[in-house]
Length: 209
Image 1 (cartoon, rainbow, N blue to C red):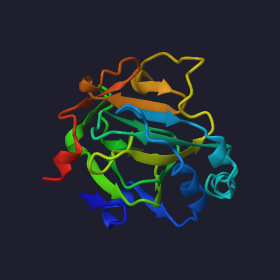
Image 2: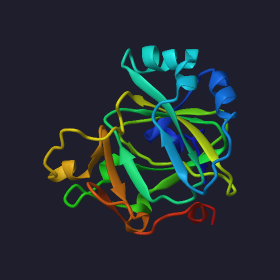
Image 3: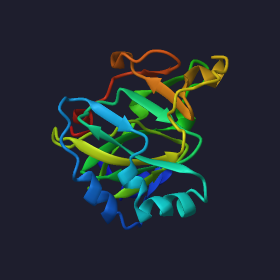
Image 4: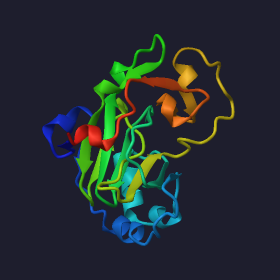
């Protein structure tokens, strides 16, 4: 398995040099989730009340309104890949692994992606990474079966439910939410406006062989 600190990560994103101590103090207060599931919250007041939030909004996103939430829980499978029209910031509140791909490898003829093209990168606890708009990604994975906790920063409104739904043709057939295009593996059980991941539904074990 590779690391986000390796040169191979440069086509997917970059590591940010930020003081994330306020975030770490808050995320370490989380109680462990009660079920082996993954939870996503687009916005958390305790994160958005930190100086780090202002830095994301005013500097990294150039004045755009942003949301600072989290994704946390238990996960060891790929299940899906999504993309946005902008970068996403992930902050590792614990050691975690990101499975990623390149958007340019999507086959838009049938809105599919071959999972053999997926790579996995270890993200050390306390590391903030920018995932470029061309990077396919989804929920992180925990390490050694442990819970993962990740901060998530995106333009405000991303992942909200669509109100005015465009016709589901072409790429729009994958428009699952606001600023969220989604491809899923059949094993995930997710349905609706989604593309398809073809091949194996990868697990962390596939990258540890």
